[in-house]
Image: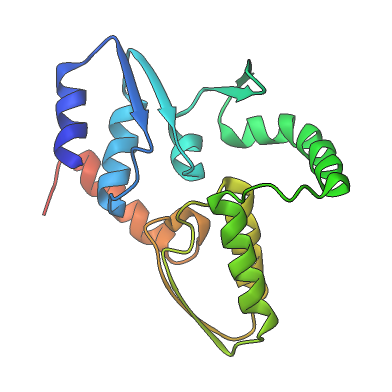
Length: 183
């Protein structure tokens, strides 16, 4: 994955399309990609579920919903603040309908997490729990884990969802990346 990203950045296309570019990257590689993406002088179109990455590299969000594109200035957090009231209305409507349609990856994950929480475990062992989750589900999971009173062992390459002592580590990695140092 790193080689493909480096090659795409090296040839400097007029339009660079990145689909889930942070998947399968470690934190150092994600920070390197963020740094290069922020310096990108041409058009960059990113599809991603990585909130931290989108907040860092985006200056405009284009949202596709019901076959319509809508532009929102700013990063993902700005988009979410603008769009959130609409989402709440839609969610209320969906809850009313309670459709028994096929479940998405996020919906399946919610069912699994609900089932786990009902068994009232003392410890959670989670391996990549945010895979296939949309951003709202990631937020809900992060909130639930913060409220969980038991032990949590978590393996994830989605560090922004679970902030904490990683911030110091990220700052150190960014300093190294900016300095051109690599292990």
